[in-house]
Image 1: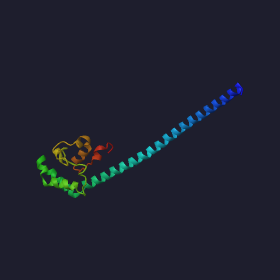
Image 2: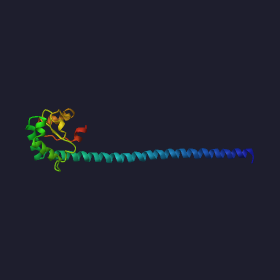
Image 3: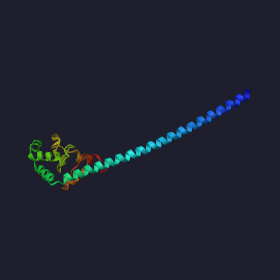
Image 4: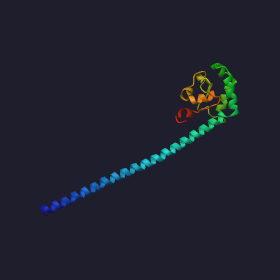
Amino acid sequence: LKCMDWLRILGFMALFIIVVSGSAFFALAHLEKQSRIEVGEVLQVMLKGTQNNLRLWVEENLLRTQRIANNPEFLRLANTLLQIPLDQSAIVSNKTFNRLSYFLKSEEGGIAKEGFYLINTDGLIVASDQKKFIGNNNLISKKRPIFIDLVLKNINVAISDILLACKHI
């Protein structure tokens, strides 16, 4: 083979390598782009599923809290406790406090596992699953004054943790 033939062969090989490399590069770039699009779609589906699950959880807790807040037994116990002078030892030793705690731990109430506070119109804690807070100012009155405003209008308010944590409610 002549030198010219070798140069032609080398030129065709170089051109072939360039074409194959370029094609591979564009194919890999396209695959990467497609992969990112698919991952984005999967993440969107997961996000929607998570949002739906969270929405259902919030609605379930809101309904449960409203059911408890409107329960005549709960209202009777809460109103009785609100009449007792605000003294931690007097409240904790009172039978009504124990009945309220039992009610909230029972299947009918079922909210005590997450914690509860009974707050008077001054924003002070009258009853709580954490006895050490009884008689103290409640954070709800600072974080969510709208709820305390409802209490001041003689509207009974039961607040779950999710209501306290969510900014849009």
